[in-house]
Each structure stands twice: as C-alpha cells, then as structure tokens.
Length: 342
Image 1: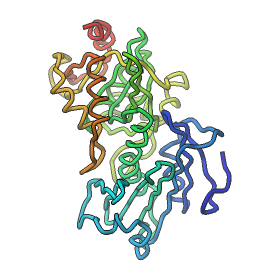
Image 2: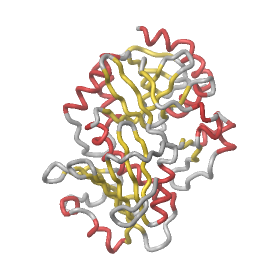
Image 3: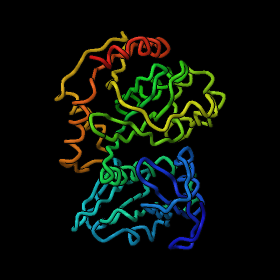
C-alpha cells in the first residue's frame, strides 16, 4: 500500500504478528534496506497500529536528529546495540558500527517509531545499512510485541509433517537455520529461522514467524547445494548470503504459525544427536538471553511471567546436534513426537 505520510514519503504497511506496521524511508538506500528486510512479510491495506519513519542523515546532522534524552546518554564508543531509557520511560536503541551511528526509538503510546541512520560522506552501500538496521530496530519492536501479549525471541520454529511444532533456541550462528533447513527438506514448514513471536493462549503456546530472508553462512551452503543456486552474493560485512526460502522450496514451505509442542536448546557438537531434559531454571536463563536484543535492555515482570508460562506448557531439552545436519533432521522427525509427550 502506498500513500502520503508525515514527510511526504510513500509508505508500505506490513502485517507482523499482532501488529500492522507502516514503513516510510528515505533516501533510497535506507528504503531499499527496509524493503529487503520485510520482503517476506505480508503486505496489507488495513490501517496500521505503528508507523516507522526511517531517515538517512549526513554525519554533520545526525546528532541533532535524535532526541535530547538519547543524546545525553550516548555511550562513548559502543559497537553492540545499547538501550537507553528516557525520562518518561521511553526506549531507544543506539549503536555505532563501522564508525556510523544508528538509533531507533518509539513514543510512549507505541504508535510512532523513528529510525535515524548516519550516512557517510561517500555513497553508502545498501549492505552496510542493511546489516545494521535490524540490530537497532528489533530491540525497540520487542516491547511493541510485548504490549500485544507476544514474546519476541531470537529463535526458530518449524511445523513437522506429523503436526509437531518445534521451537529451536540458540545464539547467533548456533545452528537454528541449518537445523530448520534439514527439516524443511523432509517436508516440514518454515515458521521462522531467526525471529519468533510467542503468544500464550489458555494452555497452548503458539509461535508466529517474523519472516525475513535467510542469511546463510558458507558451511550451510555446503550442506544444502540447492540453496547455493538461489543465494545472493555474500554480504562483504557479514560473510552471509541471502536466500528467499520459497524461491527454492516453493510457496508451500512457509507456515504463518504453529503450536509449540517441544522446545530444543541447540548445542553444536561433534557427537550426537542426543539430548537431555532440562529444568525450568536452566531453560529460563537461556530464554531470557534469547529475549534480550541489546545491552542494558530491561526485562520486566511481564516477560519473565510469560517465559515461565511457556516453560510450564512445553517440555524443553538441551539437544547436542552432532556434525551431520541431514541425519539430525531425520532423527528429530523420528523422535520429536515422543519428546513432545514427555
């Protein structure tokens, strides 16, 4: 959907889990980076709940474009995303990457978000902007989902052919995407390989995907040759190549949501696959880590209660993956029903 917005920019409205977000951006390098990030998300003509206004600004003007309360608390030299709280409880995430400042913040009513991207003196590659935007944007969006009773987790989810819904939790480069792909090749449906919004209803946990293109490292492409043919040239900053999953496995490979019947915390290992059941304390610690998207991001009682409720509904395991993703996928399909019943 396109129309006029505050700064006479066109906007597109995306349907995210529980939230309709309209996005406007300029200049073209920022616009294209956001279009790439949300290209797998459905678009809608319905009125939006949240408007994101993103602008790229030259170095000499970037500091004056961010709020006073952010400017007064900027870390001297931070590369990791860093959350700043405003005087009235507002939240912002900032980060300096490759010498460039990026900042996202949202108003108290959570109806308007802003994203400021510092643009260098020379023409800035889209890959630079793209690599950074998600790092400062998703920490802000986490609290938008929370207000809608959704828990945003750095995790993956698939629906298996036998109907079992699986959530995978791991750190970055911890095997989430590779494990999902090993199952999708066997008929499972992608919900998401990186970002999941969990909604709790009654005694059921539902995983909603926040879909975006797959970002694949070279070892994953070595395992799945069919992906290499559809992969983009590797991003020079991250070393990862992007792939739209339905371009390889067809439009039927995606599923908007699934019940969560079993939760696996992945541990990359040489031997395996094998697993052990883990308790609420150990599981909660791992989930809290996957729910934190920036340094100093506060985690309130609603998040902790929600995560504890999730663990009360779904059995959780530490899964040693072994070194063969194809065998791991077959092993999970053969055993996940039993694991879900424990």
